[in-house]
Length: 434
Image (cartoon, rainbow, N blue to C red; front, top):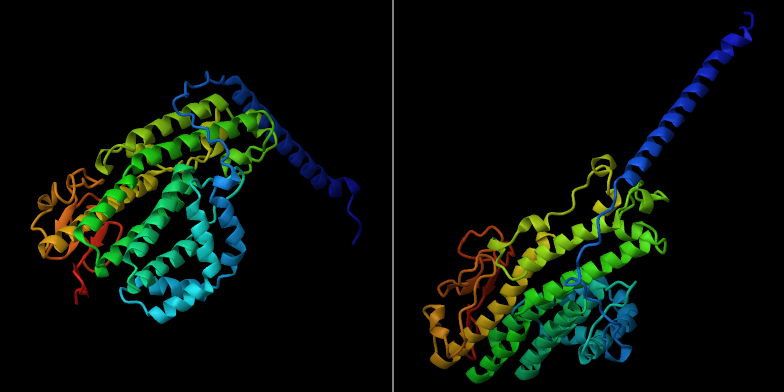
């Protein structure tokens, strides 16, 4: 068979090269048009946001409990999964094996000391650029909770309640000096503290006056809406500071997008696809809606403010693509957590009032109105629908309607946070009912 002419063999190769050339030329043209369109859209004036700015000066180490968490983190990181699960198991039951509990406390004595040191400081601020380890804090709080149970069994009721209060107070400090992530970590910590207080009431021997005093002390933690507002303002202040740094070339655009999106990582994306003032305007509107929500019941909240950012393609928002990608995660889930936090604070305070009433009268009240004003100033409102917290003495529960706003009678057999429920069943000196 003879060789084919050179022209025949080179023709497909030339066609391929020409095709690649034209594709590259078309892509370059589209990129240029895209850039011109982005530049052509003018940015807006800077938003009037002075009411939202809340800068947080650095807390000195001598006042900051965070440093003690860092010091103990290598120890908590080595705390085995089996040990963590064993502590959780001991905390979960109403009648834990005290010998096993003492052994776990002995193994975790350095962690308990770090918890004590964290609580001894008046502030808890995570420095810029560092991350709060929820697992380390959980280990501290779980061991402290277990120690409270052992103290109660040893007849040290006051110390047991004080230790559970320390867990709640530490969570509160983390929230008061924090932003979005710290808010959720603080919620988790406080939930554990409230659960331990509720469990201690099963077997406590404190008098009605002392129980009422603890209920008054819990009222310090009922301003969750104010703390939530401050967390939002700190998050907003951090976000606009990062936007300015990205726009000024001090930081890469990925610092504000929180994503590995290829367009966002394009070297000139901060100039081509980011309108800083439009972005600040959007964040300011979101922040103000959340602040308005912080004082409302869940039923009254503007939940449109809490919808997670949609994942739009770049061409769907050509005027401010990077700005629309800015991660601002205080969604409706966070608003629900705010309501749960309120319920736990008010519900636990109500539980103390119920326990004081029972200690004084030898019975449970027929309705919560009997507690007013001797044992509590007023019956707290359900933070989900604004009506009074529900009380069912037959089932021995107080509960909230939860996110669905439907009263299903509470969760008698389980603790399901879709309808937050607090169980009780204490009798003076006799421990839990069978």
